[in-house]
Image (cartoon, rainbow, N blue to C red; front, side, top):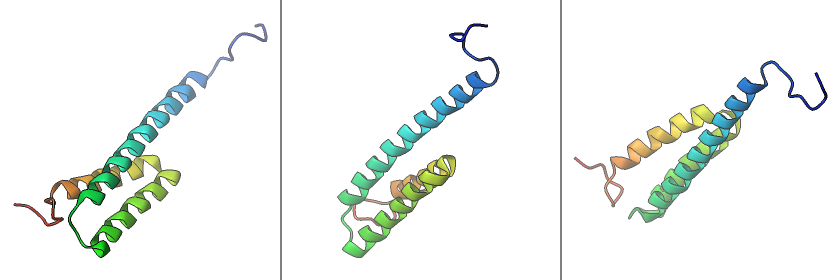
Length: 92
């Protein structure tokens, strides 16, 4: 084997996992951005908006430690947001 040959072993698996992490990070980042825009657009009190924003900041912080868990938490947050009307009140 020459020095220019790629090393054998688990490098392919590591690269695939890293690529998946990068893709998930990009997805979470875009969904966080979208969620923040939706919260800003709600017709709610400053206190309610602040509480929703804090929830999103907690998801952002969680993404630094556990990206898959942050993605799950964000999905739940967005589902809850989907249940709110433009006034921030539960619809239906």
